[in-house]
Figure 1: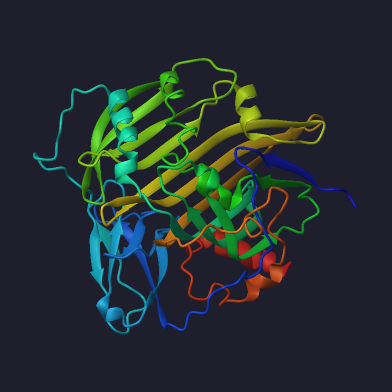
Figure 2: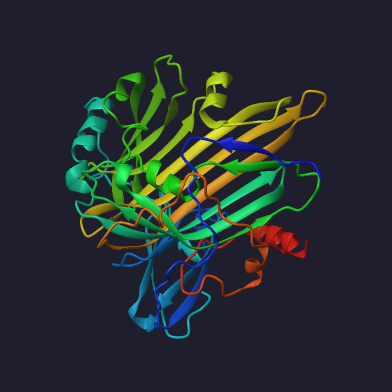
Length: 414
């Protein structure tokens, strides 16, 4: 039998543990599953990655690539209203009624900033970013918090899924006045499917896994983009303002202005006009130097395999609750091509990971080191778990889109 080769991405350490429940608390509350779809009212297109939350609460999820969501809420539902928000749209509030399970389409209207919200700011965009950095201790949580989240990681060979991994995670976040070094993640529940096809001899592993929710938090981990030592290597520009969650936002783009031994990023910050808090970051690895880009993401490859990175993209969203800003959503996509030296055509691969914070509570204590992810641990392969339709229990998850559901069905049969 031919040994599988592995491509390993090293942006962040891989922290995974076996797919089994670890000390799950018993919850006797009764839950109801609410399903729905979110669309743009102007062009009728579905809206992917819209935030869906309980109004006034901390529970949330996001829509999938098809704009669909499922949301598990405690009874009685008639006391609950769901709030749906998306970048550049007005929020929509939906009051639940007893017996609700499938909501009518949630239509979002593109946001139009009023004259009082349109602002011309003559300040230097870099100074604006620096001021937002100085306000981090006031804008973000000054206490430790326990975040429950849902994490999904997929790997595709061309259009076909060859790896699917999912987990409910427990994330301990220390105060934002402290470094991210003491933040920890553990798996509460997880499952995984691998392609059994012999032709999939090139297996792909993404180093980082759920632990990316620690290191991609650009506000908590400034060494990625917001360190005073890093800012001089970028040029900043103000773009047209927009709205997030009914609040006007500064939009600041950034591009590398220096040649360093390692690859930099280009992207966009969204900064709340009133509070000067970072509410969103979108950034991409600079691909102008293929060697540097490869060094940034490739840990190991077999001899004779040629690797070409195509795109490395990140998205980090934050959400406000009771005057403080919290991590809400993290997405990472890596696209690349591989070919053997003696073969004429290359094969395209894509690895996507995403994590949504589904609940936030004050943290009593940190996760014990013995339960936190270890660098050499990995989510165990247990395809049988995918047959349990009630596997996730009362945890909120990101609803699989249609292509992912079909992929799971195909891999189950194999």
